[in-house]
Length: 133
Image (tube, rainbow, N blue to C red; front, side, top):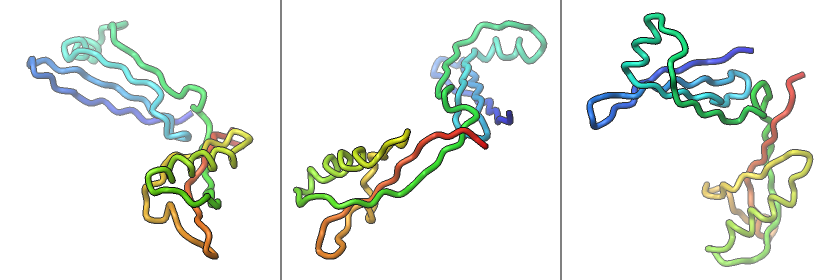
């Protein structure tokens, strides 16, 4: 497994900072671990002190080592008001997704809504995570 690590300093208004260490899986592009540690404890750690306490958050472990697939969804939507069309479009997009696909709720680009043959259509994307072959 290949990954990437980022170490950054988050300033605080009290003069002492927090070091954030993030680990990202290269294949899935998921940042799945973040550890936060005080600047003083980080200095101890990089000079050899082991097992320093830190706050850890984990995210997306079910996607680590997997690859994302994306596809475009285009579908007809009923005549609706401007304020309702995003919700209606998202509901329709979800109906088109099966087999692990997840519809995006993003409908804010200029190409999200359009007309074709005198009918109203919407466009978004769907994604799913798959095992690498």
